[in-house]
Image 1: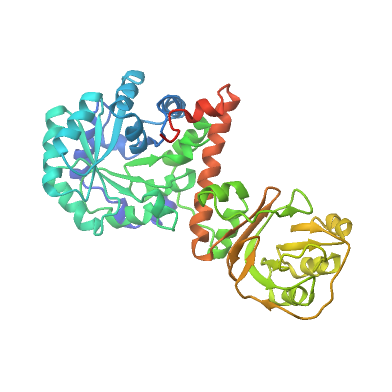
Image 2: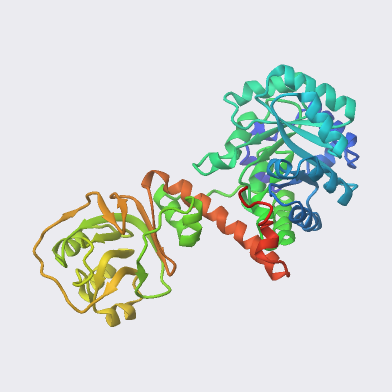
Length: 468
């Protein structure tokens, strides 16, 4: 870490009292981790969260993550709910010398759940920070009895600063600044929570929630003693390589000024990274506009809708909408179900390209296909016919319309590729884009496991998870 980079970090974040160093050392020694205060400040712990449903997959991913430089292995809450204490037992059997974290998210019966996890082989047990104080106290007593440490998760805590102080006084060993995945999807950030609680207590602080190779390094500079990474590693086709990148980021941390983007720019960037099937999956198999075909084949678009209602090939409003649309918008045209006459052709397409419009969707027909295909313009329609209509001027621009059976509103996001077109309500666009990216990551890991010789049914344990 350079002297210049240190000066960029607030002194509150860099400060670490000897009391905290002592507590960090105690936790490390209790877990049989070679450790001293000075080493800890340069060797932050990397914990990999196995938030999967399938135990066999979790074990394989854990092996690859440890090879890449992970320190601690976490049996994530989904894995524990899916496999029970057998998940912890199996991880302990497979990795006898590793620190195993059991993310139990304890809310009640603190003694019972700590005992369960400890006897199954957990080194650290996680409790919800907003559990009642009596539950916390019982969990602390049980952790001391069974030789484990207690990690408290601040997810959904309304006043994390005050609660952190209380948790320390109750005997909790580690605090986790954690923003859950559903909160991440709407823009909440675990680093903001980390900065809020840094310096509040004298016990080790972990951070979790949406971290990647860039933000892991930021977390260290903001004072994290333990960096918890899940999906960015476990959903990677190259788990070992992704873990190494995180390890490098942690060991040589830097805070890079994020590229400033507007919300619309960020949404567009996310949608251009994913497919329409990814987006449909993220919306629980909703959002598709059936019957549309990409006229130009392998092209892609994403933008906010300018809606157009027209009738029987009347091309006045569709063409006028080009003047209304802004750069990056998508025209969505309802031709009132008619496919015998086209409200759109090559000249209108050329006008769109010159204006910087991202694409056109027509619930109807299009003509001049040879010219349009040469332009490689994202155009989606239900039919191709040579007939053109007349510019009569009927219809509306930027009113609610029905396109391919779905209601669309001005400003809704529209994404199209060779698989089809999906529409995303404007108030959910950022969330859906983030969720679609998670779907893509999940598929990347499954694809790699199939390449290694498994089948889709085996990877997903299809028979086990069929609805009973």
